[in-house]
Length: 161
Image 1 (spheres, rainbow, N blue to C red):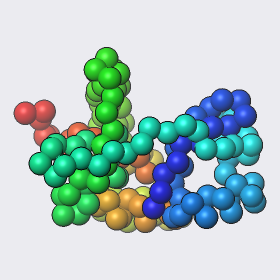
Image 2: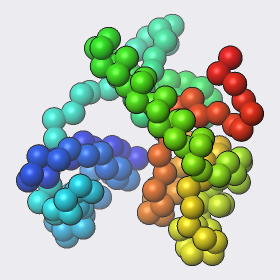
Image 3: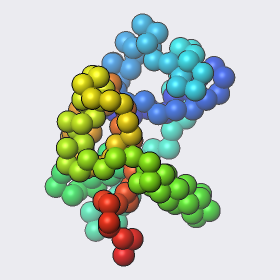
Image 4: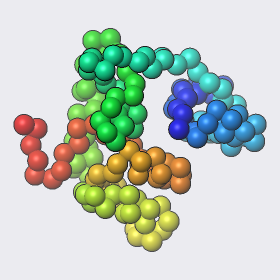
């Protein structure tokens, strides 16, 4: 799986996932990649910050929870943000977490199954959250099911401590 930052003709920047660079190129050629903000299909790769490998003894973090670590806990990427931007990101993530927890149904480890049922119209559409492995999340994305990992989301009744 590969992720690209893309930019449309109107300057909207967004992230898209592809199984390989060739898949990206094929989809661009067919005009099936579109900007989620304006619907433009005139998109190209945007300038991206590189992932920098770190020594295994150094702590790493990633802005993308799906690439933060392999199933064995091994970190696979590193994204560094300037202090003020990191602080702003944390404030926004807290607001997102609070909104999700207050407005969506917690489905626990049934998240992948429940997301599929909603996507395929087998159950009424509603906001849900729960647990899914990295592999399960990537499978959902490949099926065209929108999944947004939210770092630090809590189970109902769980405190920040």
